[in-house]
Length: 271
Ligand code: KIV
Image (cartoon, rainbow, N blue to C red):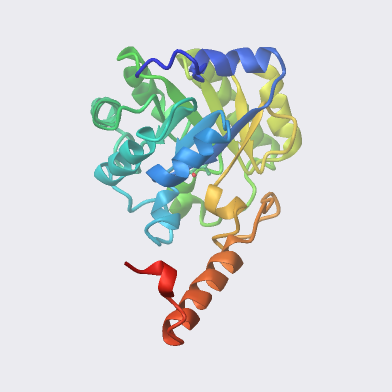
């Protein structure tokens, strides 16, 4: 990590300080250099190179097909743009479950080849050995509980998780386990707001929510969703800050019109 004397970089410790000071954490996804540069400039605390790139960038139906090489490509593009934000990179499906040595090898590749700052993986008790092994190499790990999209075929739907008491209790146990193992933060996706707030109060590490209400320590959204580039995905928790789909469509149509009518390029737009 290069040292920028005039910029206070966000580290895992800064995030924990923010929780102690009751300052909410902002987190957005980015998958490429140009967008990551804007997100960093906006002062977003954490940039997530999410495996949602599988949907948003590559057009897959789920997050399962994206590979470790592809995640490293996205992550290295993002890292080159970042001056301040903490960068978290998702470990893709199939590169950490069931084999903690493979998990460590995957995390090391992300840290070494993309020069990332930390990794994220989905799950609780069932992946704790992988988490511990990654942490033993000095690699910071963010946990992810609730709706875990890499397990979509086991659950069958993207509906709200842990509504029932039994599942909620398992989630609380898992959250405590992840903290005890040494995770620096936790994502809670699509769980009841009351449960998420209970977890955030129980944990000392920051809990960052997506569809988990306002009682947590920070919020994360997929950038393409909040900018309105993706139109087909419209869950209740999503606040759209723009309708870029409409804007881009208009710009492309105007370009086409100008080319066809020979309005573009004009005298000033040529050599
Ligand atoms: O991959 C991703 O974008 C994520 C967020 C939804 C938290 O994991």
